[in-house]
Amino acid sequence: MRILILHELDNLASARRTSINHAFALVKYAPEHEYTLHSARQPVTARLREQAFDVIILDTTFLCWRWARPKSLWLDRLLDAYDFVARSDAVKVALPQDEYDHTEILDAWLADWKVDLIYSACYDHHHEFYPRAGKSARALEALTGYVDDADIGLMQRFAVPFRDRKIDVGYRARALPAYFGRVGQLKAELGDRFRSRMADRKLHLDISTQARDALVGDAWLRFLGNSKFTLGCESGSSLLDARGEIRERVERQLQRNPKASFEELERTCFPGQDMRQVFTGAGPRLFEAAIARSCQILTPGNYAGVLNPGEHYIALAPDCSNADSVYEQMQDDDANEARIEACYRALVDDPKFRYRNFVAGLLAEIRDAAVRKGRRLPDCGPSSGAIAGELALRESFTRAVLRAHQHHIEDVKEIRLLPNFLHAVVVAVVRRMMSFARRIRG
Picture (spheres, rainbow, N blue to C red):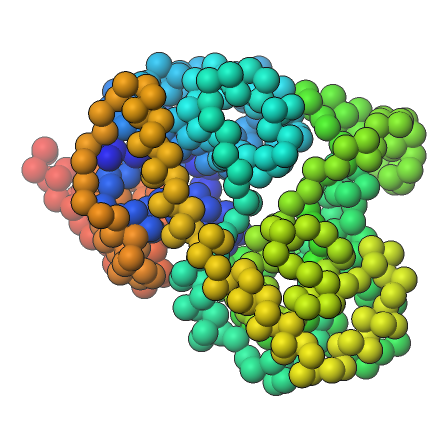
């Protein structure tokens, strides 16, 4: 099949590893298809507009353009530039996240583009989120991330034996704006509270909520693989901001008073609205920490419906009021190693949490959607998804290189998922081919 993936990962060097895994899972686990990878920051060429595709994937990062403001300058222009998607008879798949943010705009976008499949990370609320798009699109339950085979392989190299790890508790979280409500505040508050409550203990804490301390790529896996324990909580929001109006009010108030507290912002910008509904889910960190065999210290939650406090993780009260009990449990290495193995079995060993399984299900849904549309998709043999790791990457990105050459893309950002040494080789080859082509034309 000819598959177009629209994404917004223009600088992969600074992108979160989980974003790369999610955006390009199809390329890795179904390399038998023909892919065009296009970043929203690259020009929409005539060739792209005229190309016939069987499938068009709207990645999470591409759909984030609904937040850009002013809308007339950004989103409206993007919708106009990509109007060929709305007209295409391809099977269209949306992979949105943070669906509680600019919900009405997202629903209108997907409805106008006649999307066929919506993979909802807040599936319990999909009827509320997609009153228009849901009339014709099939909504399916999804997670914000899954277990990637390559990460398992890398972690086998990076992970330090549990009792030899240098970091006792590791944590990275971004302080979310007030317009995500109290639930959105918990990520940062949890790290600050835990660090404060454990300050007098003899623990090596590597906890930060500062953007400058963010870890990407292999550095993130190495960090988890050297942390005995990892903090965590469910991610999400406790505010439904249908058109971004709460966000606008919060930002206007912060312009007037940059030091305004959350309580002041709630009082002036969204009084009585917080916690009416709670939109939460398990984030990718849950799986990454499990792969790293780092014992998780989590606030109680659903966690994909498979983790139980005590058995799979140490339960931490959101206000860290049980910090003494948590510390005592951290001293029992045998119990913690048992939790680690139980968590690994529940999350990593279960095929339903693998990207490989997600891709197989997605392709099956695409074929069913094509039948409903009266489209006949090209037949192909069994998925080559069994090819794991670098070989699959090399095969699929060889096609990306050829496509880059055919399109005369001087900037080869689309193929930077390759390991560094392979990327250098690919870039050199592409540039030589282009130079040769220019000499022939000259």
